[in-house]
Amino acid sequence: MSIRKLIVGNWKMNGRKADALALVGDLLKRIGATSPRCDLMVCPPAAHLDAVGGLTAGTMLALGGQDCHQAASGAHTGDIAASMLWDLGCRAVILGHSERRTNHGETDALVRAKAVIARTTGLLTIIAIGETLAQRDAGHALAVVAAQLRGSVPDGSDDGNTVIAYEPVWAIGTGRTATVEQVAEVHAAIHAEAKIVMGANKTAGLRVLYGGSVTPANAQSLLALDTVGGALVGGASLKPDQFWAIAEACP
Image (cartoon, rainbow, N blue to C red; front, side, top):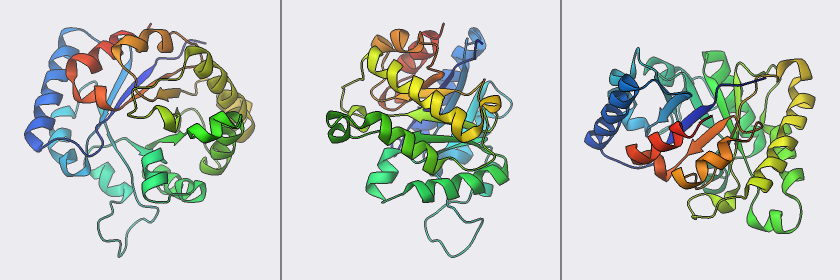
C-alpha cells in the first residue's frame, strides 16, 4: 500500500513573529507554484500560532502545535489546552518529543493522557518515541521504542488519528543521523508493535515519521523506505530552501 508521506516542520523555540510570517509566506508561494507530492505541516511556537494560522487557513500547509496540557482547562499557568490549539487553526499536535520527556520529565503515561485529551478535541496526535545513545549502545533500542509506544499510545488509536515519530535522541540536533539500515530496522519494529497495540486492521495507513538531523542530503534515502511515512524536521524546517528540498525528496 502506498501511503502519502507527511513532512512536519518542528520550529521548536525559534523565531520572532516576522520570521514566522516570512517563512510561511515563502512556503506558500512554493506550494502555489508546484503542488508537493506529500502532506506538509508546520508547528511554530505557541506565541506565533495565531499569526501563522491566519496565513495557512484554507491552504495545503497544515498547522500543528508543539505540545498541549493533559487537562481540558484549569489552573495551569503557562500551559496551552488542546481546545486552544484547535481554535487557533491547529489540526495536529506533537506529543512526547524527547526534549519534553528529558527537559520536563514527561513520562509515557503523561504523553498518553495528553493524547487522549488532544484526540477528544479532534487533533491528530503525532507521538514521538526514541532511544538514547546509551540505550542503543546497550542493544536496547527496539525494546525501548516498543515500550514507549505501548505506554504512550492510548486505546482507540488508529492510522487516522495517530502518527508515530521515531526520533533517536542521539540524532536530534547533533548532526548525526541514523543509518538507513538502522531506520529500516526500527521502523519495521514500530509497525509490528503498532499492529499489536492498535490492531492489525487499524494500521494499514499508519505513518511512522523519521526525525533526527533530517537534511536535504539524507532525506531521499530515508524517505525511499516503505516503512518511513515522512519526516519530523527540526533545524532544517527553519530554512525554506532546505525544508522544501526535503519535501521534494518524497517519492
